[in-house]
Length: 522
Image (cartoon, rainbow, N blue to C red):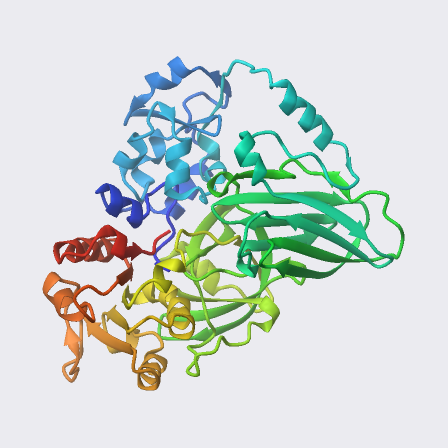
């Protein structure tokens, strides 16, 4: 994943900038870093202009505040005066102005909903939007009242979808033995797999989520305590998922527990808030002079597998403010026998992170001690394995730690995709010392004739005999070629914003379509 200094609300991803032809991250003035913003919010200065008062804001009032020198934005019903934040925003003033005087919730969700704006902008809170009360339809009201009842088996599905959609809405049931509680989720979808199931159970709170384009959630405050161990069984062909809990005391449960607010809901994945759990740092090893491989251990009561091409978010509290940053998990090493390395029962996540000397977030990461905990989110991302499974030629363009999404992708392509003729990694770095896993990549190229790796340096030493330069049309025309005239090709690209944007444009100029290009961003 692209490892850059942490961004705050709500700079767009390079994928969105590429797609929309927008602008890249802008350089900030001196004294306008994230740490400077945090200091300003702690200074006691009145950032709202309301002297500590909270007000109700009408749509008409919100619309009046639509200028750079007077800018209010609404997110999820709360109104913020972002005028003082303008110069601190990594995406530039123009990005904030897109939502000036209006409801910016959709824009915020499209760009990166993972940013904790409540923490980042808490001193800018003007108040709530004033809205007219809307009576809930009777069928929804009755369903919600049922939801608040004790869980004693299957509950009625929430009637929030059309009739045809309800036919595909997952449902659940539960049963027990003397020692076990089993929750069964009927997903109503074929080809279920472990990557689509996320389970957390902590302090009697059970959270089981089925994720794809939509999210189905079972979320219950259990009636009795259970042991830490959680087992997940999946009947892939019929789409049935079993979550098996061990009772702490072998007593008969009269009910499963109390429904929590989002229990038994089926909504678009992007509308579901991110869930975090605490993971323990168990090792930290040096990869290069400025990059480290962190190994995080998931709680015993968590079932989570990060799919190929998806990322997670790390969350830390820095100077009293929650700061969030995306990273793509990698493998502990590149397997040379083309078998997935042991996943340690799915208990560990490996993150390859460049430690920036001036990076607020990565410096806090680097100072974590073995045994310390950090919050890790559910996976996110829009990459589909099917994009690779139908390709004959796979090209991976990576700059620096933009290499990280390519690690699992390489392993998947070489182990599970039989139709691939060519897998080529074109790896851009400044110097030889910056190349991540160089020896492993070279060994992999020797092992499999389908795989090639090309190292390109922008600041090589005098004795460097390989290619040098930066990404360019001429370089790509030489390195990215179909194995035959009409072969199906997929080109994946990840790196700093200018690298990604220029690369996509060069590829399009060379005749590759948008459907043949995937940009890994966050």
